[in-house]
Length: 386
Image 1 (tube, helix red, strand yellow):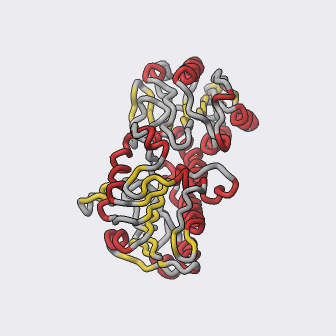
Image 2 (cartoon, rainbow, N blue to C red):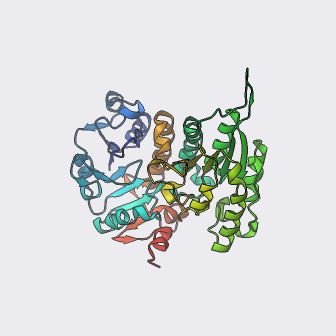
Image 3 (tube, rainbow, N blue to C red):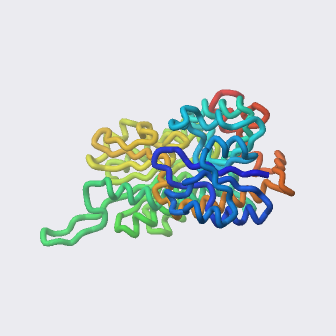
């Protein structure tokens, strides 16, 4: 069985789907690994290290896509400007793909349809369920850790004032107030980072247990007035809420946003679009110079005016919609991601062949396209296919 690891082509994406360590693990398991030359340079893993681990280094990405039975990537397939064609067009029927697809996000619908038409069998890492046997496959958790840390660093860099309390010759300068919306793994890391940097931290989450965890980190809770029975889904993730409950959330957030200097948005519902919690009118009430970091942007974003993939100032508020924040921490994030994806390969491959048990919860939640069809539940709902 041949596994291909192409170089990532998204602008600013320095991660790679395999490290020399994980390549060696897969080679030792009897797999052939093709790595595109230069694929690991951005994360400080160099070609000679891959070659020493047993990888076959390939100069042309098209050869990687042509020869591989399974493609490992970090980001969803994109248009390769250097080749003048999409990565999907380089793939072939029956080829497997493991990566972050975020298939429910509207921006990715055409790409998902193209994968289905090309006959690609794709599995999306953002669908890995929160169950004990899937923990070591859970790249979303790993990358959320990176995004929580780096997102707060980015916000502090963009904000025009000191983040901690400062005592100086002219007197005391008060610390900034940071609100984290959605206190999952990324949100907790964001809270901890903001707290370490000296901010006053606040947390909002519809799940009582998550809010309690945030409080243990020193955060002041924001009550969103949502019935807990409607809030908690399978595995402890948040459920998709009806519009009337979302209105309650928005009203509660609208009361506190004018007092916040940095808002970190990380509220997600697995396999679905991110809930829209901050309207443009709410952004207008924020202090000039405030910063919104929306790490849920891959699934549509929590803020209505977050610019996908960009950083823009709107209504005197800096809105950060960078889609690959973990890619800005390439060494650490690649170490974590590559291990997760190698564990996924080990889970799928038996006796040199991929075995897809569609009754298995991990497969059922991650499988996106197969046999020319879109089968991912969240994507089908978002596309109106059900």
